[in-house]
Image (cartoon, rainbow, N blue to C red; front, side, top):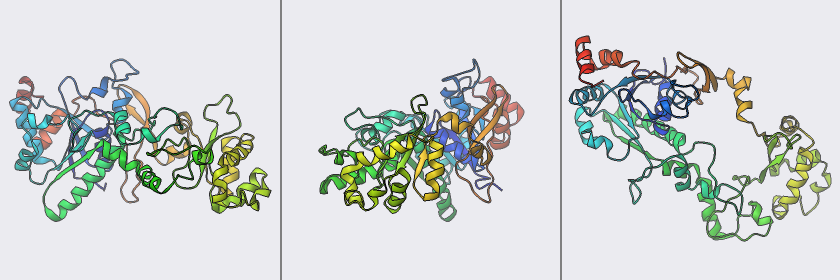
Amino acid sequence: MKALEGVKILDFTHVQSGPTCTQLLGWFGADVIKVERPGVGDATRGQLQDIPDVDSLYFTMLNHNKRSVTLNSKSDRGKEILTRLIEECDVMVENFAPGALDRMGFSWERIQEINSRMIYASVKGFGPGPYEDCKVYENVAQCAGGAASTTGMLGGVPTVTGAQIGDSGTGLHLAFGIVTALYQRTHSGKGQRVSCAMQDGVLNLCRVKLRDQQRLDNGPLKEYSQFGEGVEFGEATPRAGNDSGGGQPGRILKCKGWETDPDAYTYFITQAAVWKNICDTIGKEEWKEDPDFATPDARLPRLNEVFNAIEDWTMTKTKFEVLEICNPLNIPVGPILSMKELAEEPSLRETGTIVEVEHPERGTYLTVGNPVKLSDSPSEVVRSPLLGEHTDEILREVVGLSDNDIAAARDEGAI
């Protein structure tokens, strides 16, 4: 039995943040009913298409394990059907613009009247405050949540990360909130609202930078490269390039082949506990006893010299050779893996972290699998639905309409 088997999710989400959330719930066995506009569907079906007239990878990779029903919720018959869906489902998830559902006649208060056990979950750009009505997209969330101001090289422009921490990150937060509310409902018998703002989600992922903001009140951040370079700190947490955020100095260093391979790099951390192993490995045995290098505090003003010496060594090895040499010595390193390398990594296929999926129109495509593994709850990736593929099935099984009723609803433009 799957962990969320028997839970029905009414999925009114689109693009990325909401679909990430509902896909994760679907991976764990929830019945996710994706509600889409007739003839249109989720906007991402047609965005960034690599094959004409076929659902894009943008859509397919965010909407696995779902059933698609088309519904015109502005029509009278459509509202009747939606009311019935709310009665039968456990969770409703939406990431509409603020107030959109209210204008459709389905406010939180109305939803509670229809189904007091309903958990109503929303993704918004900002929480209550001066910006709550503003639209937010991935990079806007990264900027508003503190990620961009603390990412990039010192003296350079703020930089967004390739990881979708605004959209997908917030979707993961929302899924956690939904499961928590479902658990509480087993005791209270009542539904509740679950909300997650993208700004809040990004800020939660940037907590170490908020930590450093407070540390600045008591002096410079000595593990930051700029301390050793004599660059004065300002009032806010600065951009720190590839410095480690955990207190153990670390940087990205060149490896053999970097001249032609843009990903021939490794991340290298000078962890204090294995400093002597590092010295032996890079041929700097004298640093083990040298008072200028023997202790972490002594090394902080000299990090450029330290990492330059380490890089002289890493440039003689491939990134994988660095890993093979350092790992047995407990020296923390990590090769910079490209998306091509990850896509071709056999171990990720074996664990289901990356999977191949068959699609009736697209053929075979590669996608991510469930990153969370449960020992007693299998998780499989089922292809994304075609637009309206399960409309009749859902109206029969969930709403309880007859074939004549379905035909009438279709004639009226409700589905």
